[in-house]
Length: 115
Length: 112
Image (cartoon, rainbow over all chains, first blue to last red; front, side, top):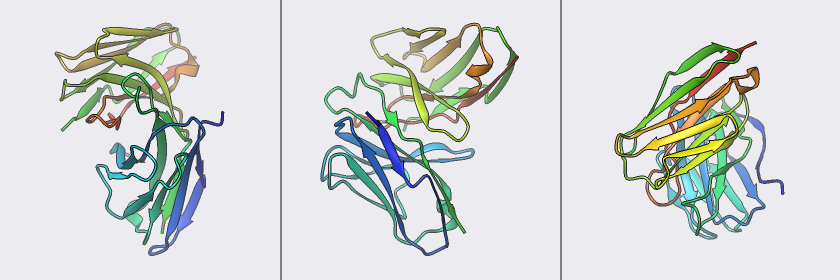
């Protein structure tokens, strides 16, 4: 199993540009999450999904949209990038029925720089 | 709202020392707590998950304890090695959808 993979690994955007970050997991997990990690702020939840076709807002959702059209994929979109969205983005997944006893599996991260 | 504090923020020790990393959280109504390791420029790797019914969980040289009543967890690393150098993150859940609330981590450097 590849686990959780993220595409791209690194990206530079200009203010106002749009992009989509892709997260894919091959473990048949129901729950998927998008976090961002910033110096001094730790990891914060952006959006999450409890199953195919469902999404919900996390702690810092403004400026982002998500979609979960397929169970294995969770997409994070930036419609109009801002310098404040410069960050490292992590995707994670976990099984549903047993999430109380299961860890979260994290992807390697996407580094985004918005100029 | 769950808030997590990790102390110390940074730690530098010589190889071979035993050490303790501390984590405190404000909402004790948790069903588990996880400890992760993050190497520079890398993702998070799960180290230990402690269920609320457990007091301790061990993996190799790592031992994590959980005291829900006091809102505290500790990660004990025995006989530290340079390869243990990384940032260690404590993460209790924030609600019942599996989302995690992270502390800012303790950055550990083990000197040869």
